[in-house]
Image (cartoon, rainbow, N blue to C red):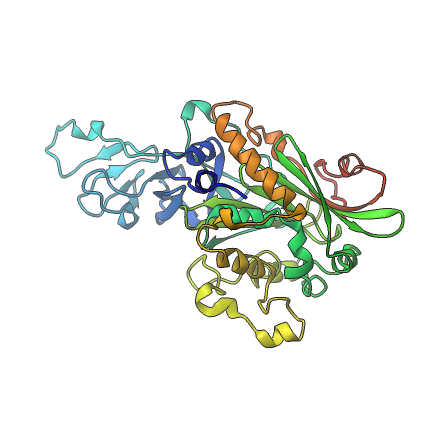
Length: 427
């Protein structure tokens, strides 16, 4: 278990906090590119690491990510006019460019130099892979963008969604690296979910509910092997990648189904963005798959209209159906793999009290991920933090049969490497 002080260190990410300072060393998935589509688009509210910001594209298509509140009287720039190269506050007309410079101040006398003294807090933002990425750290220490495989694929080969989760980021992320829950929480959905069905591995997941875990450090974070019995000669391994500071790559279900992954990004200390993506390196998604993504199948969700909040929520008991639970259509009575996960993670409270935990051998990955995060706090100024090098994120996960005497890191080494233009391996 963690001490209360350690739990606070890991879960508090606002400005000036140790973990907040660490996360600001990395590029952050901020919003979908389509949310600020088109020059002079409507401004969009963005909250990251406890900071309230506004995103917009100016007349030339440059991306701005600036403090939400005008430097004049702190009115929200969400209500501003995006026009002629900047965002103009609707209260008194102060106008800001994408770098936060005040470029017009009509409320001041003509010839006043006051305008040149005003600088709105602004962060660098770029578009890549269908997302807007923000860098909120020291400009002189800006790292390269991550190199997650889907970022370099054609849009037809990837699908990206986000949802707001009403818990601290850490318990959401820990759920993403916990492979043992698959045999229970998703037990009755592996065969009928269109993105997970038709694979040999499903029978091993259901027949062996006591996986043995082996965890090894990787350059970017952790390599997590969940070992299940297959036959007298082989083990079935599901190997998950966790990369600093918040990425997971889900072991795929067969090489015909898409690869999946997540990022767990703090909005503040009580909510987070759960980013989810599916992608396939060698084929475009078809109509069936797009319909499944849009319907909230697999790791995606149905939304409350006009929001990125899941339709299933604590307010409606996540649309739990006890009759379906009794019929073994779902293990918990909650439909959808994503909702099955976040319902349980949110049930732990806004910030889980890790002083009350009693962790077992299946929690090895969670224990080591916490240790890596805590250790990184001591090396926050290092240029060699795990996950900063783009090569650290250019990896794959896999599910594979290996002889019982072969270490999983060695046996799966070849299929864990990204090979552009080649399909991944998974059973």
